[in-house]
Image (tube, rainbow, N blue to C red; front, side, top):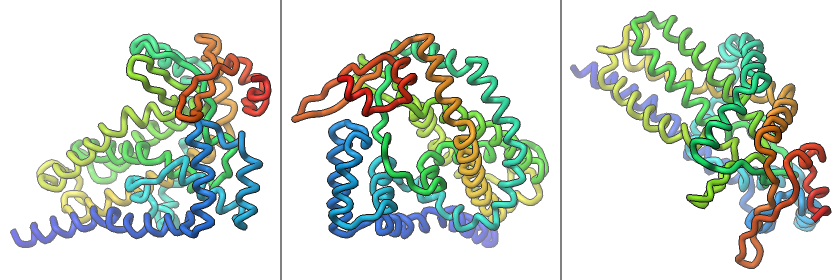
Length: 357
C-alpha cells in the first residue's frame, strides 16, 4: 500500500513538472520579448495600430521609423509584434521543453514524420482538390446561417519570428489531441508497443488533416455571426470548437488513468503509474516536435497553393466581400473594399485595396 501511494505521488509530480517548468519559462519569455522602456514604447505603438483594426502592413514604414528612434533591431520588433498578435499562455509554455528535448525525442519524431508526407498529399487531394473542405464550409454556413466574408489579417506585414517559435502558438490543440488519442488507445487490450504504434497512427492522421485545414483557412476568410454579434476567423474555428472539449477530456482521462490505471491498462510497461507518467510526457513532447515539423514543411511547400485554391472555391460558392473592420474615435466600421475574387487576383495586397478606397 505504501509503495502504491509513493508510486502515485511520484507519477503526479512527473505529470506536474511541465506546469512547474512553465512558470519560469513564461517569465523568461517576457524578458526575452522585451521589458525595457524602449520596448514598451514600441509595444504601445503596435498596440495602437492593432486596436484600430488595421493590418500592420498599413503602418509598416511608420513602425519601422519608431523602432529606429529607440534603436530596436528587426528581431526585437518581431518578438514584440508576435507577442501582441499571438499571445502565449500556459498551454503554450507546457510545450517549450520539447525544444530542449529535441535531440532525445527528435529521432522518434523523424520516424513518424517521414511516412506522413504521402498522407499529407492524400489528405490535401481529398480535402482541397475534391472540395471536401469547401463542402464542410457550406454545411457550417447553412447550419449556423453565418455569413462568410473576408477581413484582412492583422498580422499582414508583421515581422516574422523564427518558424519554430511562430508555430508554437498554433500547436496546443493539435498536440493535446495526440495525447487525447494516446489516453483513449491505452484502454485497448494491447501491448505497450501496439498502444504506442496505434496512438502514433491516429495522431498522424489528426495532425495531417489539421495542417491541411490550417493552410487552407489561414487567410482573410472569416465567419460573421450577425445574430450573436461575432466575427470569427476561419483558421481559429477548429481551435475554438475543439479546445475546451479536449482540455476537459484530458483532465478526466488523466485523473482516471492515475487512479485506476493498473486495472484498466493492459500493457506490461504502462501498468505502473511512474512509467505511464513518463510515457505521457514523451508523447506530449514528441507530438509537439512532429506537429511543428509537419506544419513548417507543409506550409513552406504547399501552404500558399492550398490557401489560394480554397479561396477560389469559396469565391465560386459564395463570392464573398472583403471588408475592413476598424475603429476610429470610438466608432466601429465595416468598410467594403472589394470582392474576394478581386482580392485574390490582386495577390492580397492591402495597400492596393486601400488606395482604391
